[in-house]
Image 1 (tube, rainbow, N blue to C red):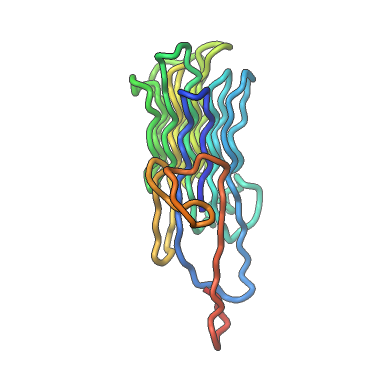
Image 2 (cartoon, rainbow, N blue to C red):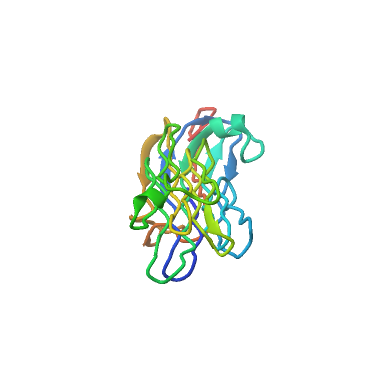
Length: 244
């Protein structure tokens, strides 16, 4: 699974790329899996910019919203249903959104989607940035004073961004096992979410700032800069009622 990219402000202030996770599981015949694919974050002039589907945090006033995670679950429901979230067997984190900077010198890129730990937003003064998600609940929003209230990430959900005024906003957190935190003011960028592989066999997770397979496996890329993606391969075992 590949998580989605956080929202860009422009060609300089960029959302974080999504992470990658894979693993193997043995299932009984008839088992049902539910796939939730993350959506890219965006940045517009709106007073509320919705995060990418499946957990990207919301932003406002040109701040980048968070990218959504991609995950596979054993319990169906709305993407933010607690029981469904708690049934996830694999998660690839979304990236944090870029800041809605006031000038060309105030660049703040969103944190990459984890690995087991998401990347922090990258504005020079880190008090404005959201922090990356981990695999435990944590207070990971920015700490600077902000006109709009930034929030921390939570289970499956990236934190919302603060804002400076109706012209400039911060970046929001990416979705993940736990979401990244929201940024403050017009400077802060959102943190990336964390990935997860639970008890899967032969697991591998790669952060969105590192080389990972492309969707078709024919090449590599540095993080996922698009919507999320999921791919399932299976082998039917012989003389057994299980499928791997």
